[in-house]
Amino acid sequence: MKKYGLLFFALFVGLLLVLSSSYAIAADKIGFVDVRKVMLLSETGKKAALEFKKAFEKDKAAIQREEAKLRKLKETLEKQRSILTPDAIKEKEIAYQKKFRDYQRLVKDSNEALQLKDRELSRKLIPEILKVVNTIGKKEKYTLILDVNTQGVAFHSKGSDITDKVIKEFNKSYKAKK
Image (cartoon, rainbow, N blue to C red; front, side, top):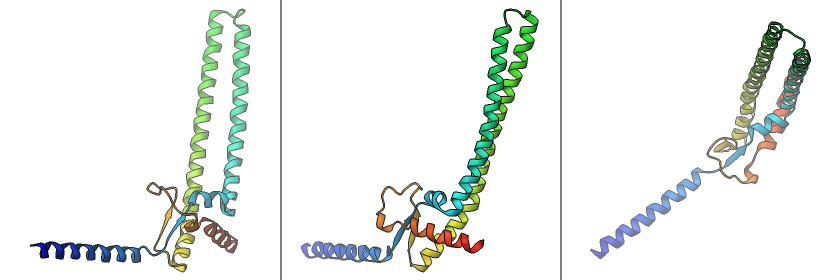
């Protein structure tokens, strides 16, 4: 009986050693990339960010102009409140409320347009970035390359981070397309 227990233990330990060594061999080379960083620091990403910033500034200026008009209208209404008839006050308040709703619609539409532009830029850039990641992965024989911004990556060694390499290659591919 003792012999069988010892034999089972030896087989179990041997099996663990075989499985752990084959797992170590399978997990050859793992890399990490920060796709968001590539989008921000690559030449293409910087150009896209500049386009986005221009659109944002244009919308921001329009919103600020409307805010100034609203403030002026409100101040005028408050100053004239004592000399206006109740019907005139009500009329001016209705006009102010309409302008305020228009302002809110402008802000909402502006935010939606900016979010759409951001999604479009991401939709264009991410596939191009992933092509570069795939090329590097195949060329340098990576088993796995993970995006550090996805859930599940709690830690990674900076030595296995290929983000700078991806930015460099992505910039090269961008220049080649020009």
